[in-house]
Amino acid sequence: MSLFQDLAGFFQVPWGDYAGNLGWGLLRTLAYTIASFAGAAVLGLVLALMRLNRLRMVRLPAALYTEIFKNVPLLAIIFVTYFGLPSIGIRFSVFVAGVLSLVLFYAAYLSEIFRAAISGIHSGQSEAAQALGLGRGTTFGHVILPQALRLALPGTNTMFVDLLKSTSLLVTISAAELMTRAQLIASETFRALEVYLVIAVIYFAVCYPVSQSLLWLERTIQAGVPLSLGRRRRLKLAKTLLASGT
Image (tube, rainbow, N blue to C red; front, side):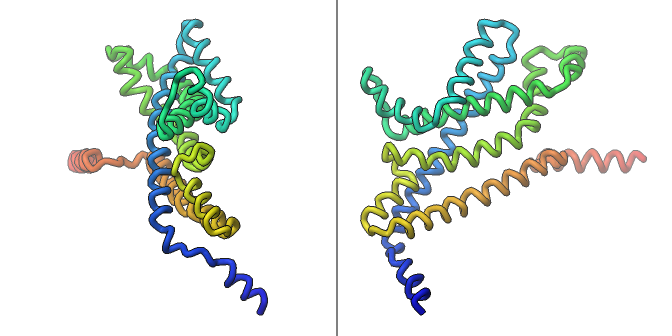
């Protein structure tokens, strides 16, 4: 009987009063995730191309950047960006500082994923494209990059989910994301265990469907299934023409 009383007393936070705050916190978390991942993907691709460049003076800065940010904690980057830079006159808003920190950190890891994927494309692909008269830019954009993105998809998906979870570290700068909202609720209700368990469940409820959706996307692309309706129609038309020809 006492066990049921303890369990009943465990859930005493009036969650209905905080639903709006949690909703806005979750939207803020997703905004940080999307903006940071987009920036990290672009910067990571640039760094990967620099690492693959034949010139040492181009490769070296990218390699140095990658090694630095791979071996510095994300929390330290957040503190330097938001608390450290103002001491030299550089100030960012909370959102910009949070996104910038995540971009700088995850670009290093994505650059390694992209570099490995691009390097994994056989050189014969480039040679065949050049034999057809395609320029270097066209060869990379239409031959190398699509295949490299397919190879990079598993690691990129993992980084996306990891980035989503890492937005919780932005609680240290009061970024108004989900974990910050949880901290405020815990301080108001003095029910820290209950609050943080519920927040952990919310993170799981968001991250698990996202990871499974990305896994489905990965398997679909690996199977060669076209994603756009236009490509599906063209593929169906091609199959029809081949069947009628036989």
